[in-house]
Amino acid sequence: MQELTFGDHEIIVSKTDTHGKIMYGNELFLRLSGYEEHEIIGAPHNIIRHPDMPKFIFKYLWDTIKAGREVNAYVINKTKNGDYYWVYANVTPSFDKSGTVAGYYSVRRKPSQKALAQVKPLYQRLVNAERSGGIVQSQKIVDELLKNYGGRYDQFILSL
Image 1: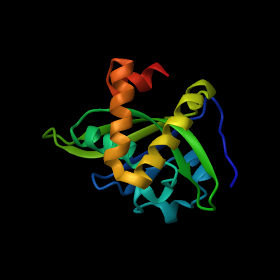
Image 2 (image 1 turned 30 degrees about the horizontal axis):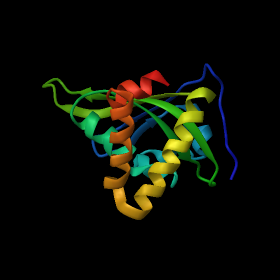
Image 3 (image 1 turned 60 degrees about the vertical axis):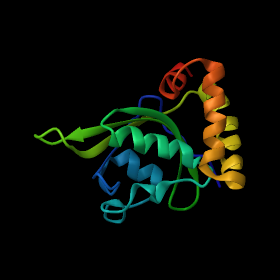
């Protein structure tokens, strides 16, 4: 497996419905993921989920956006051929005219190496904890980190 990267000023964009099915992916999303547009439209966004991505982080992400709030997270994605790439994602809900969440919009940028130096070992700890004790164990690690940090997860992510 090879790590892919993209330019500092390039932006990955995708849109999903409320069930996480991809409704749109820009050219960079298609290029990095390795999928053709006809393969990705209508597919679940987790088609690019990397096995080294902690389940707890996705649970936090989904809980936050389903509640109608934006979220930021570092994510490792898997390509069609098994390569991978890191992103700093901002995911926001889209609302219909009645104020109900109608879908999600994600803008992803290249993460800084400084942030990844902290995120990679943390995510490895979380994945290892999940393998032995599920999401509950990784949540304990995050709760302890935030207790020592003195803030919320979103504040921690923004500080990296």
